[in-house]
Structure formats: C-alpha cells, structure tokens
Image (cartoon, rainbow, N blue to C red):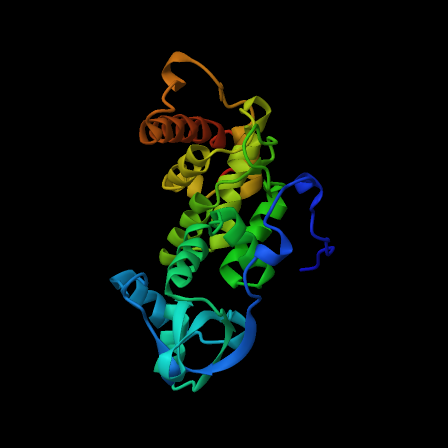
Length: 289
C-alpha cells in the first residue's frame, strides 16, 4: 500500500496561544533504562486490571521493537525510575527478560509526575474503528485486506469524514463489516465473498438510499445473508436483485433511529423478502457459493 506523505497541517491553528518558550518545562532526555530499575507510584499510577493483564499477554505474544513506543519516566531516589506512561509494555518487556527499554526521561517532581500522567492518559485521541481498520490494511493484516478488497470491488469507501452526510458509496461503520467477515470465517465460508455479498446488495439498492451506508444497513445486510438463497447468490446477482428496493429515508415505520435493533430487524426482513422474490427471477440468482 502506498500513499503520498503529507506535512503537518498547522494552518487551522494559526494564532493559537500557548505558554512562552521559557515556561514550557524542562525538555526531556531520551535514553535506555534498565527494566530492573523501573518502579510504579501507586499515588497516581493505575493498578493492572484484568483487561490490562490481557493487554500485557498480547504484547508479550507479539513483542516487536517496531511496536514499542518509548516509556515516559521520571527519576526517583536510588537511581530508580518511576513510570508515568508505559506500564503495560514495560511489564511485558520485563516478563520477557528484556534488560533495557527506551524511555523519555522527564526531570519533574512527584506532583508534576501525577499531572503528566493525567495529561498523557486523559488527553489521548482515541482511534475510531475506521482509523484502526485503515492502519491494519496498511500493515497488511490478511483479515483487514480481505475486507478492503471487498470494499474496492463493490466501490465502497471507508470515509474519513467526521460528522455530516456521507457519500452514498461510503461508510464509516467498520465493525459490522468485521462481524460479517468473522462469522463467515467461523462457518468455513470465504470472508471476502461474504462482505462483498453484503455490500453488493446495499449498493444495488443505493439509488434510493439515504446518504452513506449506516451501521444498521450493514448489520441488516449481514442478517439477510443468513437466508440460504441469499447466501448462495453471487455478488453480481445480489446487486441486480436489490435494484429498486424501497429504501426510504423517512417514513412512519422507518422512524426508529432511537432503537437500532428494531431498525436493523425491519431493514433486514424487508431486504431479505425483496431479494428472495427477485432472485428467483434471475437466471444467475442461484450461483454456487
């Protein structure tokens, strides 16, 4: 996967005010520190929870320096270092017998350490499922690449847009696509084909669709694939069969946005019934799975 490298975009922050250069604290030092010298300050550092232990096991199982961001630490008495950020990856490295890890050394006292911990862990920009999916595709994860191939073949884009109306041939709902692929894999079916089938029926009906493919649309298409005739039909047949599907954006019985389960169930039932009726009239409607 190739992309055009882009510079940092600072134009929208022109005129933003921050602390003067001499009020920005002491610049950190980058160095390697011994894992045996790392310590946790329970005054502000979180205990390792059950979820944290699972994360540490995952880091251990797939340990790779290219995934290992430097810790953020501060010096403590006796030549030790207090971890401000990176407790999980430091624990994983120590469990593997790694003697030294890279760290960003902050020359700050305990109060500033707690403030830094809150700032680093509280101001993190969470990655959306779409962001994570794009990163997985770029990393050549086979499962993500299979979904991306299905998207490409059916002409659907994972949108980078935040808020507003999506293009009809786009979606920012990645989770239901992953669910369809995982269900196919568990059933011994081809994940790429299953995702293609779901997207094909939605794109076939897209002439009358609301802007973009929403979560309940894709989930509904996944439920439609539980029908034997629909599941046995190839993507081309499903796209043809879905043409003309009544996909109103508004209407009394579709005004269920407060109840996504009911919306999805209604959508899946109508789509399945429409496809079954139309597939029987298509010569290629029963193509082998």
